[in-house]
Length: 259
Image 1 (cartoon, helix red, strand yellow):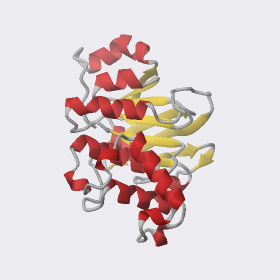
Image 2 (image 1 turned 135 degrees about the vertical axis):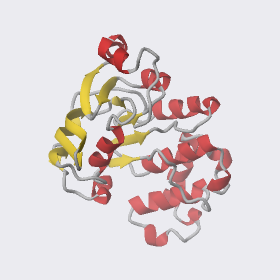
Image 3 (image 1 turned 60 degrees about the horizontal axis):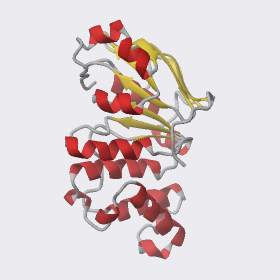
């Protein structure tokens, strides 16, 4: 099942998140609500605080004040590993993969880990039919079947990004945080990533950080704009596109920077 249906049920919420680094306030009183099944983009210029916010959502950084809730549960002090176990999974701006493993081996390890069968990962992949079947489905879903047996280091960059998203999906997230999935990907391969992400299960909420505005506006059902660590505005893609404040921030050129 795929699509972008939204039920209105809140799955992820931040309340007045503040993160200070010395005298610098990286996120300033950020309150964000992500609903079940939403496609929610987080945009903003250089230094807007987007990645700092994602790092607080995932537990990499502890907020100076404020709280993070997942499905109504306070997870503010929880480790990143425990958050993954509860369904909050991310990808990174910089690809983080095992270069010597094949996509099939990488996925088998991820699926086995989720099933608490990591102690068996060294066995031939086909020795566990359930794991093998799930890996085959993921390879097909992420258009990696032709590359299943190639060492990851040999994959085209766009395919490596797809594998990274596939590994995140293998954790069966309820909320998937995609930190610039198209960063560094040649233009010809970006549509592949967009189509694959757009086809994620409808009950998975996706939070996307991305500087490619074409990708953002073709994908998102909700957009939050961060500027200087503060929420400037939030709305539908049409509302954001027509917002004079947003146009001023981007100087009317439609291009955002990394942050």
